[in-house]
Picture (cartoon, rainbow, N blue to C red):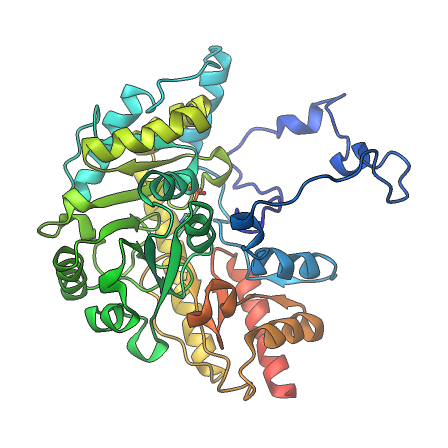
Length: 434
Ligand SMILES: Cc1ncc(COP(=O)(O)O)c(C=O)c1O
């Protein structure tokens, strides 16, 4: 399952891979970590727990997604539209580069900022979005986009700083801000406006007083992208109010209507923006854990200071795979994007047929339908639980993505067409029976 749930993905194959070496590994450590601390198997642990979570950790509730999937895993015959990761394996050139890297014994650390070869490849790749970043000074390779997000908060948020977070949005930002000692500020966006973020909404929420704004476009969970005009307007707001921006563009390559545009290309924005991207989504490389940050030299320097003590360097094998991904996998990425697009059209059409309003997702691989029209109490968690219990469809309650997601469900179409068809058939049965 997704990095959001921390669960493991099921084995998958696209027919291009050699036999799974894990099948022939004997004597590998299969021990259950739970057993190690509970040798009697009777729920007793060997040592008392003397830890109290630090205040900023205790303040963060467990992930709503994780809680939901723990329940889902206990059910049989579940069709899951819950996963936030591709159902494809990484393209073969990337996998074979990883294998070759290991075969050559390239198992050491790399430079803190990542290999020069990969940083050059990244700088070349992002030119397609109008970016020009110096690979030596303005690119930092990280352990997933997740690490880059965390570094941006830890490097630039002081205790008491306000960080504006449009809601609904990706689940990691609010805890990340809190762990860094900052104060998250929710900026509501609305289904009726196709989840658009406007300067008016920012001002109304008080973001003009904030120190930082986090943008996530294409958006998880809504699939919304920002139009050129919206980007202009939000960029002007950030310049006028002197906000730093963290722009998580991990779904940039999965944009269906038009080309992705980055806020950092707007006047006055490059110097105040950390652009984040990675290999998990477009290249289906979630398990290889590789992302990157692009920012002016001083910002990359500060983030590298945190990264070099906390992480040393991103995984070496994955860095070699990533170079191959950039250089040799464009066709595969295009093929996956076409397939997501096909599923997107199918899913949104079916949802509307079933009477669920859904803003057209124009990027990422999620649809975010409103359930309040069919569930008058409007409780998305109760709806998701009932849907799972009654017809075995797992979808993430919208409120897991912040208050702005209430009354909605996140459905991932990074799921095979057969499963999408079965899930919508079951959803129809469920809605008919209500
Ligand atoms: C918006 C967004 N940012 C970052 C991540 C994490 O990416 P990575 O696997 O590169 O850490 C995710 C994963 O779901 C995401 O949806």
